[in-house]
Image (cartoon, rainbow, N blue to C red; front, side, top):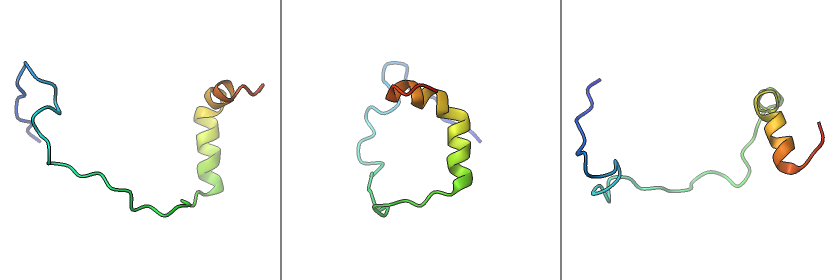
Amino acid sequence: MSVPPQDEGRSPGQGRRGLFAVSDTLPHDIPITDEEVRVLDAWFGDLLDELWGLEG
């Protein structure tokens, strides 16, 4: 895959207005499986406990 060079004087997003549209078409509740919860807890459990002030 080839990526065109960027101008050095501007950030990647400058001058590109209108190329992307952001929309929220997700349902209010997004289902998550028990396996997904276990993976998230394994990777981020300590960090989330620290952020929420929980003692592990």
